Length: 277
Image 1 (cartoon, rainbow, N blue to C red):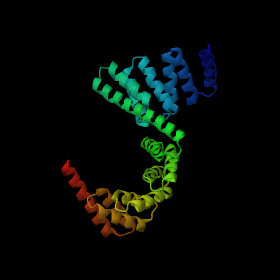
Image 2 (tube, one colour):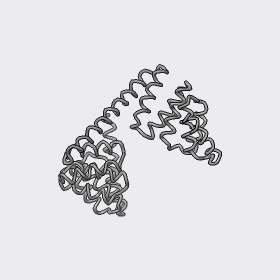
Image 3 (tube, helix red, strand yellow):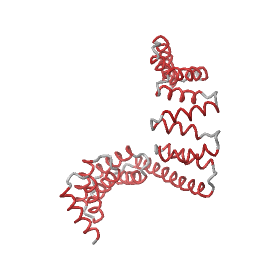
Image 4 (cartoon, rainbow, N blue to C red):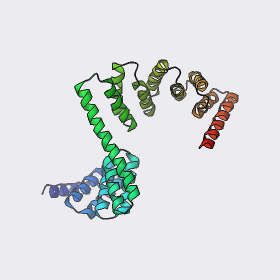
């Protein structure tokens, strides 16, 4: 009865706001719950047409196609959803089951294995959260929480645990991950602070120097970038990425000769790594 009432209200709302993706989505979900899959399909398609970024509507569309035994379309929607959200656990699970129904066992095994990996990581997140709830000074647990969130590209969620980690232990790996998080958020001033600290902590690390130089490039601080990248190049002469960054920095400084030399080294190293494969 509640679903019927919801459908009536949503249909009424739909007549008032015909291009409201949320109304279409919830009407589609209500139809799905009632088993009216054809009606659900119509509404969910309308929803994703208006707003293709809606993860919930895309997921429900995949489920609806599965119930209608339109497995090829279900595969397409679940794959699109996984492209948008690579850690959508249920999308992996349902895509794997659709592959089983299509007799595509290798694809099914691969996707269902990924589902199990995400599921295990979800459980790890829960355990880590329990650890910091029990002991708010557990540096490693804070670090692991932040690292997993950053791996999942959940930048905002990563900041709090990593900030706790470095507050408890200044000489921490948390600075490296925080720098990476801020770069991806395009918060370069914050990223510089953290990369500068890890360079101080480990001055012989060419990767850290290259990261700091790259962020200086983004901030258009080319002299500071070149200083870090030259040291990185001396520490690791075979890293093509460092030479490319050096080339960009020299070019921005107007020194075309040194830019060309660095780019030549970059190309030579790139060709060498291709030959090694």
